[in-house]
Amino acid sequence: MLKERVLRVWVDWTISVTSRVRGRGRDAGAGFVEYAGLMILIAGIFTLIDGLGLDGLISGAILDAVNNVIGG
Image (cartoon, rainbow, N blue to C red):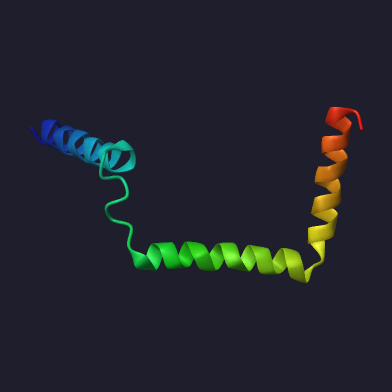
């Protein structure tokens, strides 16, 4: 009896998690705090790239890769 109950709880939890991740309301729980945190993280990455002077290096690498592909 306990085994069946545990299995049922596991199945219910799995269905619930799957519907939240892939279902219609997958973004329903995301609020302002989550989006603000994401924006702060992205801004931090851009600031780090700019502060370390990697922007020119990244641009040059992309330009070299594109030139290699198009033969220029």
